[in-house]
Length: 348
Image (tube, rainbow, N blue to C red; front, side, top):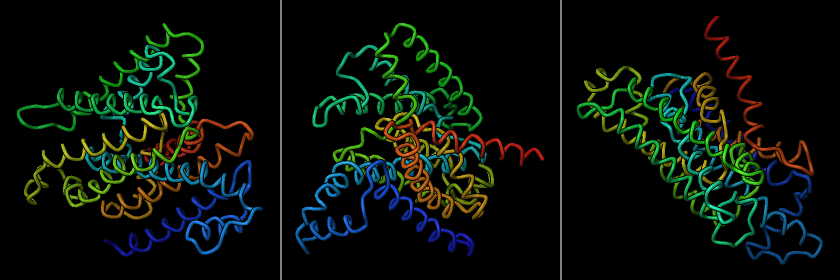
């Protein structure tokens, strides 16, 4: 790990801490630092919670903390999956959507909303504690994994999976999924169109405590697996033949990277809807700042992705208060100009 990367990771960690602190303290209803200290002291059994901080405690424990944790995990997952796909495709402008995971999850979620009735709606539209909260995320999760497995199956050739064929298969599956979404929107009613639009634009409004352990299992653990692939991705950056001569099982590494990235992205998309540009912008920014070593790129992407989505969620909650902007709109407003700058930079 280079000196630049070793110095950059703590700085990104500090940025994440600042973003999480802002997400917890700031919003339409402000929470004072003294309230945070009082709530923490009560949770640790140091001192009972004073009555004047009970409102702060309710806001923190019921809304802000689970939402901040969900935002951090989803942002980290999307970014580290994007970094892995950029390494796999040897293209700094690659995105997790290239393997069909986002489109597959979106098609499954839209089909569930349009065909599943009132039980299958975005989490923010349902009451807390109802089993229906888990139905739509489960359908979207399975849809994302199914689409990725289909892409991998189509791309398989003689025991291998050529990256070029994988890319073309992903483009085809994405096109089919988008056609299916268009057909479902055509037959949907007004309420279903509103629900579909809400889900496709992304939101963390439905974040609740029961989601935290589920996302820890489906995002944090697979993301740790992607971190262990850093050496393989460094080898693949030299080319598949060179990686093979370095002793890397190239096809096995590609399969593991695709499966882990699909699980991470499917889980994030399932609970929050589509969130654009995090998996594209964050890894590229880390690579520009810290170099191409995937030990740094993967870890830095996870930290910066968590910070970016936490800050984006804060902006979504505050810029149009008391209304809430879709978080996918906020990340697109940040990511699209940056993507255009990258294109301009590469061309010039």
